[in-house]
Image 1 (cartoon, rainbow, N blue to C red):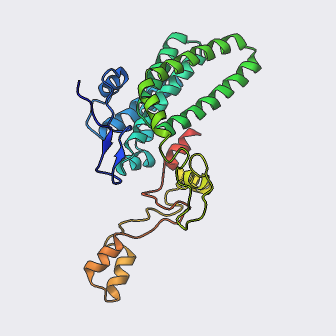
Image 2 (tube, rainbow, N blue to C red):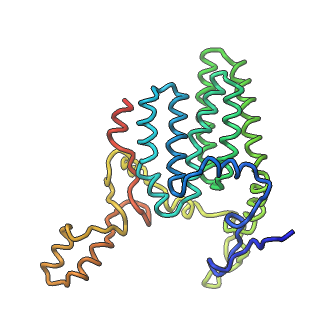
Image 3 (cartoon, helix red, strand yellow):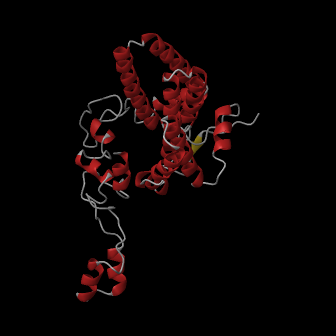
Length: 301
């Protein structure tokens, strides 16, 4: 049997390809995922956005017409389009399975143990298979929040028996979703021990001083591209903190007209106007602001 080398020389002067080059021939979850994502990229990710969120809204007992509009609004929200445009395919892939997982959990908590457990297991297996564990981590946080809410509700309504049964079904479903991805999870665990997310082998700083060793990445590195608290208002107010840090304003901008009026050649003025830093928030690099839509938020209420 031919063996593939899990290494590439084409990036970063050589690097392992555990996350992009490994082939698991008996991975049935990948085959299911490819069947669902039958459309060409990036339409396949949009399809996941639409169908997944539509399913979640139906489980929430939203009218099918309203659910259709909600799915379109979700799928075309700015951030979900941006991450596809800048190449965060795995992130888009993983987010696409968020809604089906939540739909399965809600069905289970409502007493539909068979269909809820089945949907949860399949959707969670597909979520892990998307191979973006940071997004899966965020999804698990959402699951904990939902579980806390359901626990409080069961305590108020004295429905502990149904809660325990639901939790048991969900635990089994999540476990099954995990073990179906055991091969890739174990490979990632092995790779993580030698990545920047583990302990560094370096003992000196670039200046030759002893280096303080630590496990994993620093908090500053992890949160470098996190939204500022006030930036969250971008979800309902577009460009509240500007646009991209490399934005094309074009010939119709005041910047271009000003430069031309000052005698700058039109070609240089256009080049300058097509690469302007219009963002002034806390992140170092931004392709565009994340915007859901004021109308969408208005319709929620």
